Length: 102
Image (cartoon, rainbow, N blue to C red; front, side, top):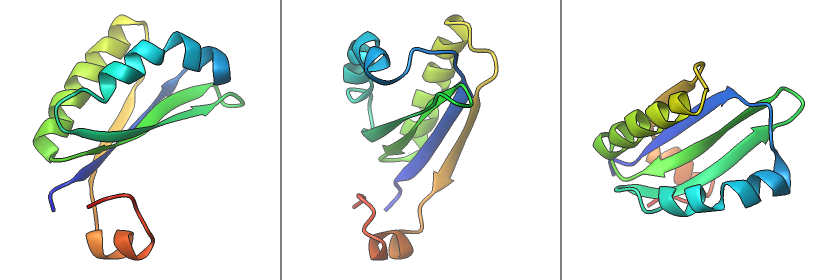
């Protein structure tokens, strides 16, 4: 398996919760249509003013392509401080702990 996890985090003043969900529904629908994207978990921390996501991609190449596109989009929206990483998956241990991969 060559699936990878992508982690993205950036400072975000809001909206959060239901308001964020309403405003970004179309974006969410488009993300899952990206080549190689298997799923995304949207993350938010209103206390620390952070937002981001954890994604599963079918390959490092599709993850890198998406991450470049997403970073550029976030920068255009005024988010200059974006933290991101791509991680390989230890399939044996992840499956033992019931990770939604495979």
